[in-house]
Image 1 (cartoon, one colour):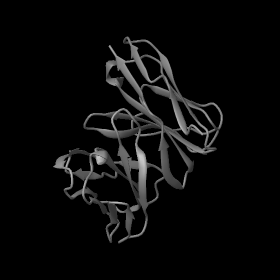
Image 2: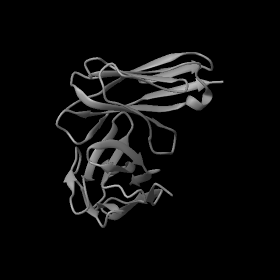
Image 3: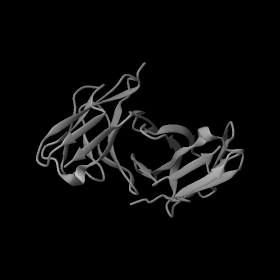
Image 4: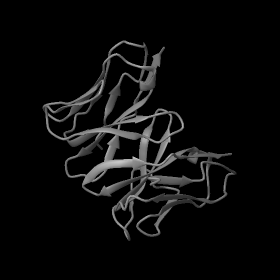
Length: 111
Length: 113
């Protein structure tokens, strides 16, 4: 079983602060995704990274895939209340056709 | 273009009752998935259908059955509901098995008393 550990589990910050959340595993993943889930809704895909060392930016969100493809990070610059939600990472292991999800980081951005 | 739709949105069952959760997608995707989400447990795969006509067990299939009715529709059935099946159920679709970008429905919140 390929496990994805996310940290921190909970994060509460003030509007305008920067933050980083992490997604770590002992296994290599052929690709890794980040989703955001708002209360009462399904997860929505933010980004997919496939190459070790890859960095992708989505407005104030920066996603990085580790060189060894075992970990990833999500950095948010100048967080806004609209960033509030559950952030999930999900990976596809080598030889697998299924996504493995982490348990998520619950982010609250206080105005 | 509605994406992935799920019915019902909420349901309360008594132990032992049966029900079917419906899911439909209008994106012409080949693969469809059923997950359950529980506090502190993340999303866990129940069953999936890589393509029309095929279904396979995921991580937590016990107590559930599925039917891939056609390319658009994938249903999840609880034959004899148990309190342990109280959860939020999500259906997702994916263009094809090797493209892992999944699109989720809004979820069904099920309570079994």
